[in-house]
Image 1: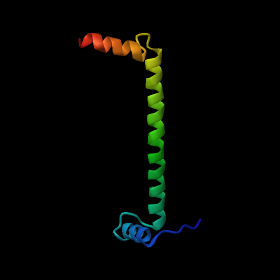
Image 2 (image 1 turned 120 degrees about the horizontal axis):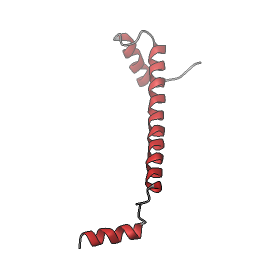
Image 3 (image 1 turned 90 degrees about the horizontal axis):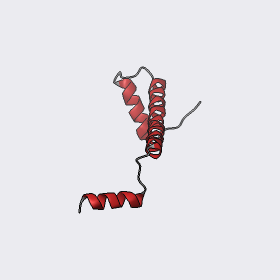
Length: 78
């Protein structure tokens, strides 16, 4: 696989290797891809938790519709 980088990105990668953080350009690219995968996974995990939390609210028999909730709030603060 061949990839093309802008001069700025190429310098960044070369600097990472030169300062000893990585042994090769390939290591830098692999780490970048691992981080991208992790970044993409986090929102999906958040969405799944949010869906579960919404379902808990929908399944709760105490849940009020918007109109009833507003009436309860108004009564509470009158």
